[in-house]
Amino acid sequence: MFFRDAGRCHARRGILFVPTPDALRRAFFGDRVEPRRPPDVGQGRLRRPVAFLSHGQRPQKFRVAITTYEDKRFYRHFGVDPLALGRAVRQNLAAGRITSGASTLTMQTIRLSRGGKPRTFREKFVEMVLATRLELRCSKDEILALYASHAPFGGNVVGLESAAWYYFGRSAAQLSWAECVMLAVLPNSPSLIHIR
Image (cartoon, rainbow, N blue to C red; front, top):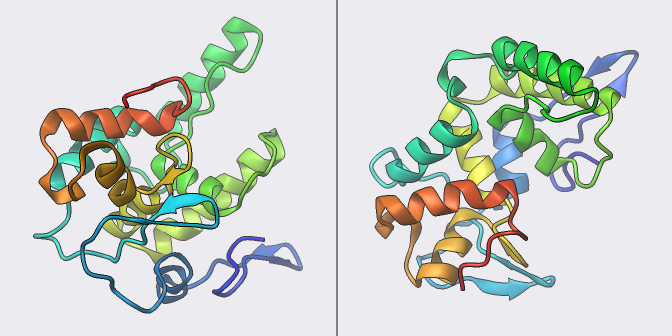
């Protein structure tokens, strides 16, 4: 299922429906804003819901680091990056196997919200459609906030704020450039990097 608490994404007569931005916020963050404090352990995961922060409170360093590392053209595409898709097809054909998936941050946000779906061509196409729909409904900053609050950061640590408290003992807004860059590369393969 796409979201448990908000309107569900489902297909009806070939049309995919995506929840509204308010439903996305409620599904990911709930209706409350918690004060800054170390994260709690709940359901076996170290998780701390992060509210949509105002522009001045958002960790700009992490935003720059994640868009530079994961999706350089994040602010210039519509959820699917045609240049990255072409590059991935060329690399996959040259290698004779899948070496690149061309996922954008929006597509990764969709994948995180959909749970453990298998990585197939059909699922990639569904992610592309849902990413385009999400781009039409949410701003780029909202999509980044969704991604940052649900990305895995190794072990049972989920979300940027939890990772900042777990690894560095302070909130994400107080991290240095080096710490933000380290957290930006960590979701790519969290089990291979051991920083504690």
